Image (cartoon, rainbow, N blue to C red; front, top):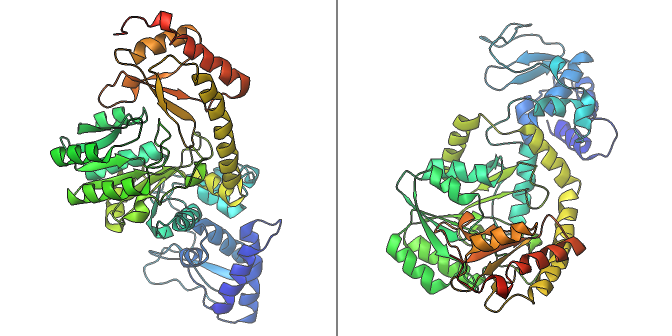
Length: 463
């Protein structure tokens, strides 16, 4: 068994042009010829031992069977098992050889796209076959292992088995709300927040309480008064690169807020932004690193691109089991194809390269925006973000963000008015995002927005 595992690990680690399942089969073949009667683990067991997709090991075993070195033996609970070539016995009660599965509504390999499609992702034939089928509710194991390693490096102690993959942060939050709250429960969120959260919360018919984000961020005294008044069942917080302000909560604020919420029995959900996206200053540990009871959710949308709808959830194991059950009932499982694509980008270094590119671009574009905003009318204030691609402005008393946004649109510039991102309907704030444009085009756009704030256009209260 040890010789088998040693050969298998060497094949996985080796750099070669052959698909992984072929390398694995080539490595295991000598074990069958050198060790008569060698015991082979099930495809599931070997895949778990090597951190591979089970389909990869299954494809390797099929290749060995094609060479006449193995006889595949169906197992009742553990998928494909293998036996030495001299044996063809089936365990009692197992399907007979040649059994046909007419119960599963999924295509066989003859109906799948050509192998070239999967080689684009760096997948071998067996792996490609695996990612075309319905996935496990927990998600693609290699990506879960990669995420566990990265999060552990940031102080969040997780194992691959306690990482649940989702279809992005929005999907993760929806699953959490289904699993943890009931209609009428009180949920605390930052005010403003990202524009997708208020409608999601409304769908769950919960009581939403906004924790104001002001120019200095969240004020601890204000938070304490609010939390003691409403005792929220759940709190959703973004301590690093809050959207839309780009603010980063300091360590003292994080600890004080966690202590406060813990004292009221509030379950904390952290929207996790990778600290490598912060372009200025040091970043305190994530909330989930400071308190093992925190549930953290994240995705690849900001670090790679939004079209890669892959996210994740980590937290207490007992809670994750319940969330996984909800996910299994809601969508059967995630997309192994997209999850494998995310994993391919991560293991090839694209993720790290992209973080560096985004951090540099954010710093450059912010300089353009703040230079232009230096000409803003008196009373217009903003939080200087420490990363990300948006800035939150506060308008003078009596001004309407909806009116300002409408006038800016007349000039061909779109900004986000307060009510679209505020759970309390705040109309005194505007989000200026600069992810979609840079350079001179960004400078021109900000100047167009400033024209909508010109004193002659806002002499009267905008209500």
